[in-house]
Amino acid sequence: MIGSHAIVAGGSIGGLVAATALSRRFERVTVIDRDALPTEQARDRRGVPHGMHAHALLISGRLALEELYPGLTEELIAGGAVPFDPGADLLFHQMGAMRVRFTSGMLGISQTRAFLELTVRRRVLRLPNVTIMDRLAVSGLAGVSGRVTGVELDDGRTLDADLVVDATGRSGGRSDRWLEKLDCPAPENAVVRIDVGYTSRLYSRQPGDLPDGALLALMAAVPPHHKRAAAAFAVEGDRWVVTIGGWHKDHAPADPAGFLAFAEGLPSPHIAHLIKKAEPLSEIETRQFPAARRRYFERLRQLPAGYVALGDTVCSFNPLYGQGMTAATLEALALGRSLDKFGNTSAEMARHYYRAAAKVLETPWRMATGGDFAYPQTSGPKPLGTDLVNRYAREAMLAAHVSPEVHRVLLDLQHLLVPPSALLRPATVARSLSAARRSPARAAVAAKIAAPGS
Image (cartoon, rainbow, N blue to C red; front, side):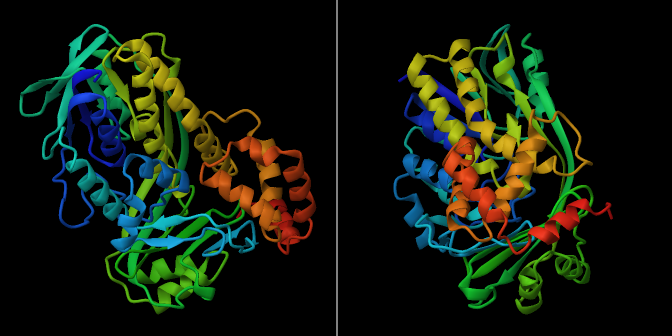
C-alpha cells in the first residue's frame, strides 16, 4: 500500500475507474460527488447534463474496463447492452457514401451512459475499502504551498488524504482557483471553439428499423460546407438513442417536427426513416458544447504533491467523437502504473502520470481537433500539419467505401487500438490512394469541397 487514504472528487466514469485503481494501492478510498448517485436503477442525473445523449464506449475502453472489472462485458450484455461488430453491424455514412461492411471480429457494446455508469458503480461499491459519499461537494483543496493534503467540503469539514484525484469535470477554472490558493500555477489551456449542439430522443426498437439488421448508424456530412452529424445506437431495453446535431450553430431543433426535418437534411435517409417509424419514449433534449479544451499539466514546471487531475478535468473532447469515457479510463490505468513506479504521491509521480496521460490523449485530441478544423469557422490552436493530414484522411475515408482493409485500419484507429502511424504505413497509404479512386462518392465529394459555402 502506497498510503492510507485517497480521495476522488467526482463520481462519474473517470472518478469511479480512478477509485478502483486506487483501491489496490491505498488502504481507504473515498469518492465524493454532489449528485444523488443511483444504485438501483439506471437514470440520468444533473451532474451529467449530456447523459441521455448517445455515448460510445470505444473498444479500447471496453478492454480497459474489463481489465479492472473482469466479466464486466458479459454483465453489461446480460443487463441488456447490445453487442455488435463495428465492421458488420454499423451503418457508417461518411464522406458521401457508406463504408463497406465486413465482419471484423471486433466486439463492441452499446448501452446508455446511465446504465454503464450504474454497472461500474455497483462494482466499485463491492470493493471493501471504497466509500462513496454523494450529495456532497468538494469546495477546495487543503494543504500547504506545493502539497495537497486533503479536500475542503461544502459542509465545512476537511478530509485529509495522501492523494486527491480531481475528476470534477470540464470546469477547469474551479480547480485552477484551488491550485492557485496553494501557490501552484494553473496549467496552460488550449481551447478549440466549435459551437457544437446536439439533440436527442429515445425511441422503441424493433427489428428492421435500420436496414440489413444494423444495430448502429453514424452519419457525417462532407466538410467544410456541410456540418451535420447523427447517431442512432441500439441500447438496453429495446430502445434507440438518436442524437443529431452539428458544428458551428447548425443545431437540431427541440420540437418533433423540427427534429425530423433536421434529420431529413442528413446525407443518408436511414435515421430520418427510423424517427418516422419508431415510437418516441422520451422528450427531446438539447445540449450545447461551445469549445473543446485541453489543459497541459505535463508542461508545468511546478506541480503539487498529493494531487492529480483526470478525465474531463484534463481534456474535454468534442462529444460528437465519443472519446471521453475511454480516455478517462485509460488515464486511470496510467495513474495506477505511475503510482506503482514511484511508490508515493510526490510531485515527481504526478509529472510521470501527466506525461503518460498526455500520450493517452494525443491520438484522440489530434483526431478530434483535426476533424473540427475541417471547418474554417473553428478557432483555436491548430496542430501542425492538420490540413495535410485531413487531405490524406479524406482519401482514406473515400477508400473505406470500397476497401474492407482500409475500413479496418480506420476502425482500429477510431477505437484507439493503434497509433495514427498505422494509417501511414506504406501498404495502407498505397491501398488508400488506389481504392479512393473507386469510391462512388469521389466526384460528388470533390464538387462539394470546391463549391462556395452555403
